[in-house]
Image 1 (spheres, rainbow, N blue to C red):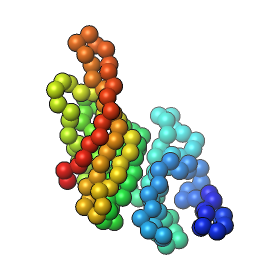
Image 2 (cartoon, rainbow, N blue to C red; image 1 turned 135 degrees about the vertical axis):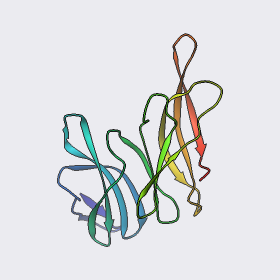
Image 3 (spheres, rainbow, N blue to C red; image 1 turned 90 degrees about the horizontal axis):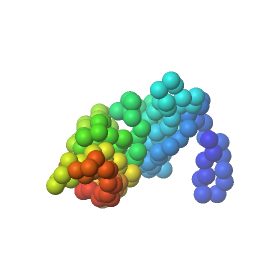
Image 4 (cartoon, helix red, strand yellow; image 1 turned 180 degrees about the vertical axis):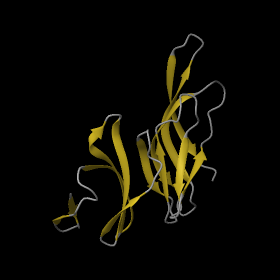
Amino acid sequence: MKHWDGRAWSDMPPPTPGLRPIHLHAGSDDSLWLIGDAVPWGENGPEYEMWHWDHGDWARVEAPLEELAPTALAGDGRGGLWLTRGPEGFESPPFYWHFDGHGWDRVEGERVTGAPTHAYAIADLAPIGHTGRLWAVGGFTRLDDDGWAHSYDLIQHSTR
């Protein structure tokens, strides 16, 4: 990997050989959170890993990345992280995971009301200052009475 420090490019050792970075969050000048997929992919598609660069060293972080692709990573404004990924199931609400530096808590997002909603897909997260809360943007799908799928945009504010 290459690192730009504002003046010049330098080599930055990757956390592990074959990891392709896909999401980053910079907590400070010396703290970088990275999610990547391992290459070559396994039999079931990509395998995702989370790493933390802290004052010059990479450390692997256990994160809820099994089975589904991470779609967004953001800081919480208080030193923690928010993570979201593809839906748990066809009719599940959106889920977010919060990392406080010690462990992950799963937070269920609000469902859109008015009709059955399917397949939430969160594309990006934005922290709200230093509150620990966030905004999320993405979309969801609903089936009409004839079984046709209709897609809608979504902007959601966390209550936690």
